Amino acid sequence: MKFIYVCSPCRGNPPYEHGAIGKRKTSLNIWRAGLYCREVIDAGHIPIAPHYFYSDFLKDKIPEQRTMALEACRRLLSVCNELWVLGTEISEGMEIEITLAKKLRIPVVYREQ
Image 1 (tube, rainbow, N blue to C red):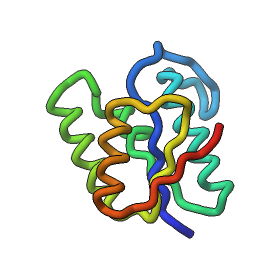
Image 2 (image 1 turned 180 degrees about the horizontal axis):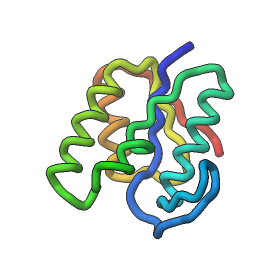
Image 3 (image 1 turned 135 degrees about the vertical axis):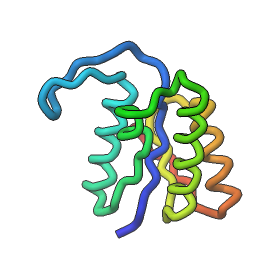
């Protein structure tokens, strides 16, 4: 099993209520990140998707909290075997993660959706 860093958009999208685990309001991008994690598990690997769970307790609009989250993401990425780019758009944050993965010589895999 590989550790797969899930690289997908985080910011944007209005709140989206879904019933994956009870009633939860989140953005459509975060909901999709959960689906991408499932894709990684279905492929037999372990998903690492900090933006999926950090969004519950760190606020992206508060600069100090965004900085903490980005640093944690960088550290988590450094221990992953691959970075999978998922979704149809590449955000500013994703570009940073892709660039770092390449710098660390972590394979970047673009997955078709």
